[in-house]
Image (cartoon, rainbow, N blue to C red):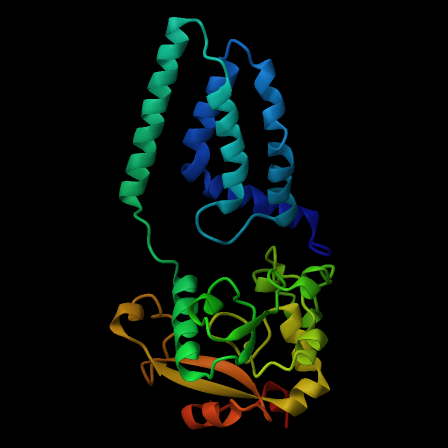
Length: 300
């Protein structure tokens, strides 16, 4: 994570582990008990070695912001595998205690699922809606650069995408994480979150995308990430691209999920895109959208 203080990473990791504990702690305790109480623990200790680098990733990355404690899933799965392979204790009382612990763990998970039923992730819902809008309004083969490769492209299968954060882009993925630009130095900003430190604005421009979306799933006129910042600082980007708003009606099925993003004056979702001036999509967006004042002209 380059220039992020180690103390901040440790604090974020500790918060991540404790706040997600209710989702994995019961399984971890049962598996640990099964290993500790086993009559032959030695043959399963080696199975636990993968847990160390997996847990180290949580510390190095400072946790995660996604739902479901996904970074804890892998080490807990390894722990549970080792527990299931551990030879049971020959003592009847220990085996009975194990059954009780398993029953309590199952009831704990059941009540947890009952009290907190699975809900759609608002961020994923925005990505789904925006993807469907782009799929409906843009011509097949349109090249879009966006940071939300985990949601928007899934719902726009006829379009092509550049993942500006690099998870699905070989070039950006191989670039070392960069120091935080002064303009993005916010302690609660997205640039400080694990997995958001790579970018290459010049490379994105070399691909000549028809549309570029800065920031999150429905776009932003301002930078969130390194690649966004590099683009806005580029003279080529300023000359070749201009920002537009697409104000899109929101169906009732999405309104509750997108309530914080819907424009209160129009009741519509503003989707912010930068469009290449000589793109075939320029007239398409111009017919459907509203031009925005570029941020680099704010002082003029």
